[in-house]
Image 1 (cartoon, rainbow, N blue to C red):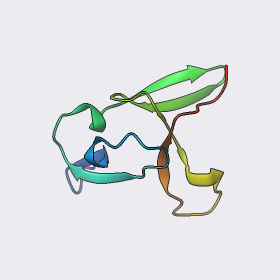
Image 2: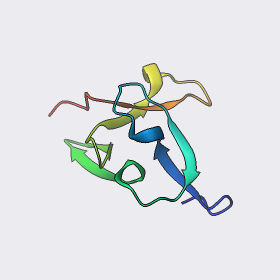
Image 3: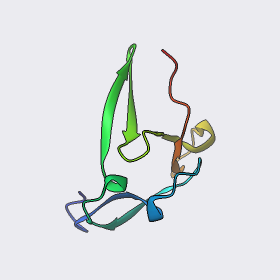
Image 4: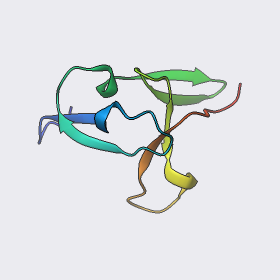
Length: 77
């Protein structure tokens, strides 16, 4: 939860499409606002609870302000 806005990360409308961006939204307590960490080898992935998709920087961008999106393919074991 953002301490300034009191809003949380959210997958809009529980959208399961790849490349769906995250947004900031009021806390609703649903699983599209819940995430978990998963260790794969030496890496950590962040997954969305309701659809088990991973979060990643869109198009593996290295630039500032790059979008964070959900994708189906996570780091391979």
